[in-house]
Length: 391
Image (cartoon, rainbow, N blue to C red; front, side, top):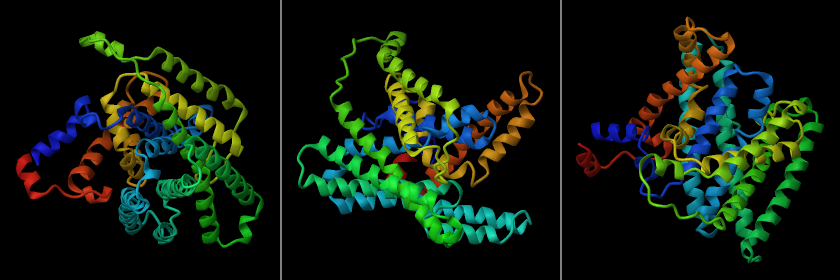
């Protein structure tokens, strides 16, 4: 057990431990690490409106783009459909069920304390069964359905069209058209005249189809990345080796994409993907892709940062716990009480300290889930032989 804990802690600082013998693309974990950090920042409510609008354009789309990119790299559309679907359900829906159950326990405690009414756990159960998800948990069923829709369409077209680029472009056109129809139906049909549960199911479907545009683009990005051959690095050590890992062109391009997003911010409103409250669907797709590409290029152009990679590998746990399990709330309380005496602008001081404390609190939460409750993530406990080796 001690060795197991040490192995998990090594992920916080060891690049070798995270790479898993070169089988894991750490820059994708870094993208997810930064994205989940920005999600926490957005949910804190401590940043200015303009910056919050900027974050809302790409911090969630980045997850969908990475999912599409991984789909291409793993060639999931060429594998057995049943095997891929089971793997995705296990990796996404098991956490959804377990974290929903954990959220229910937390809410029941609050009900017994008199902080919440019985309507809240009832709402959680109904939303969980309908795959609408309670609080931040809505993201997991949307991701699953979005991936499955893309996978099914790719499978269908792979049989009749040989060129992969053509399949991707046709799929993009189909999903864009369907998503546009659903989006405008959602906004033009009076929600008050429809049963709340049915309306929630329609919103779930609409979000899932909207997400397919990002997933398909991620898949296309994976194809493009295969044509970009990395230049062989000269043998070096120490600081020189670290310096050679930077790609100046990628950094500049990534920064330009980010700059485009930021320049547009003053002209749009906050993008609330959960409630499909989007300024403009095509603007959301454009800015989401723009910001995600910027993040991908920057993370691909810099050396691996172990702590960021660690958060990226465990972004699902952070997503499911920072609000539902009051980790962010605890971080804000600790940040306010511990850092209050320090000099500096009150707003900035509270935001920085609260977010730092929240992300630090997430570390033991992540370790507890990974070591003691791996079944929550769809994983098995170590076998007796593995335990003996780790003893």
